Image: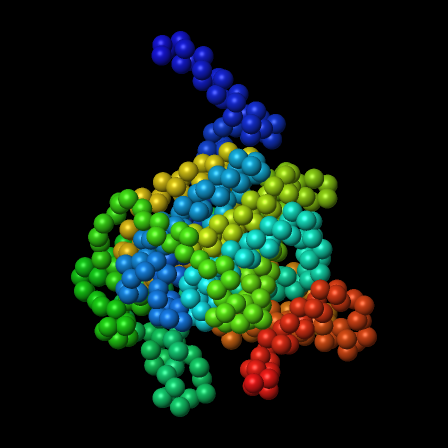
Length: 492
């Protein structure tokens, strides 16, 4: 092709992109969209490292690990590849179908719930099957218009409490996985369940790595450095590599306290053909036989609830920051956004990497100037490229990655100001929802306690009509859930 022909073709392509994504119409430029997409990727690429660390070391009820292997970390690249693949495909879909600057990836909090509350009671295939089922239900709710009705059934402040409680739960997981907080063995004969470090003191260099990571990510965040989480993970991992090269530490499982909690930071391969071994590893209705119909339904409902409300809040917030919402606070193409997000939840389970959801970190790209779906396409392409670097996760110790959980916990905790603490009718249910999630290490327990308290208090003060019928139904299910053992014993 001649130079003259090339110059003639470029404006045509530019006009094509501009027309398809409505770049000029929304007051943006091609450069801003590309920069915004890159920034969004940098602010959330940590999930490719973090998701395998959350999912990869938890054995299911049969002792098997997600992605295969003996749980020594060799399965992490497989999970990382699947994580990046689904995030890439669905984020591109969000850009191309909904034309909205919103990126998707495995949901933090949801993945911890799938690992610690579902897989440990069944199998990984059963757990991912529940995620697929939850995605199907949400998709049906979106297509039928019923999602809005259910959305209005739960009081807004209880929705906020759920997010805050999950934030505290995530932070606790980060502290525990880093060895900063440890469980006290039963042989200690103490009523205190947890402690600082080992024996009440911080022990070992890996804990120092975690502490440095927390300080660094907080410092970068308050300085509003783009990519703060990813930068902190990389920098803290480098520190871990240096310490390991000098000190030659082992792992807690093999060498006791003071060593690396999960995987030892040793350099190996960095680039490889991705292994998507988790794809298709799900059993749609397996959990109904492994944990029981009622428990499976409640677990699926818990997943649905977390996915359900988080996305609507996220897309509204992103649209508001971008100046795209209408006078009613609704972003453009909201139905398409919800459809893609529902498919993402389904796809995450089908790919064996947990439910995918919309990321509030997309706001960083909007801050860089992104206003259209082209930014999402750029972010998605970068996620697809990262599938070839999945082996890097084998070299990242949890102490370098879990400081991100502490920060994310803080970000979710900020929503607590949206609760009216002077209104006891909502404050007490919200309080129980928030504290019981980390205290019981269970998201579903917190939600159940909050719902039951809300319904009970409304009944006591004579405001039964204020409670949506769906809340009564859900509260009834949670009564059975909490009393399942005595009910089972009585029936049998």
